[in-house]
Image 1: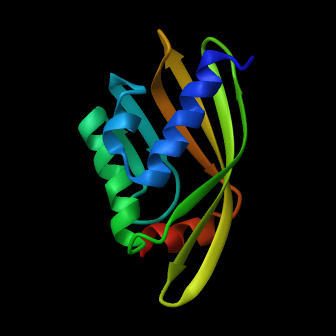
Image 2: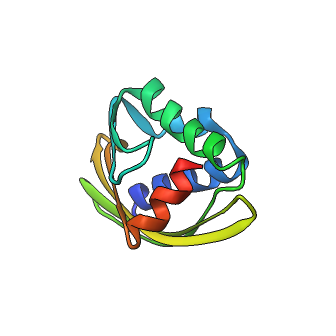
Length: 130
């Protein structure tokens, strides 16, 4: 049986795949924070559900809806979690692929903070720039 926080991360990825932002937001605390690394228009810190949801909408917009996050592995305990995914998108007719690790902090079973670590920041910057 998986830890409940593993299931929380997995459910958020499943919701993102179907565009169900409300379901993703239900996994977050009200004061959730997302930290996106890089040198791209979406890089920076986002605080609060609406701001983080706007960041996710920015990914969809900047990639013309082509971004996909293929979840490969999740580890989590009561306070911390990590996911590994392969992100893909098509930008200007070019298929791009990059691996990312997301680090999570949990508070009472909900995600309170997320950090993104990209294997190839150059490719991630291209994807997030659109």
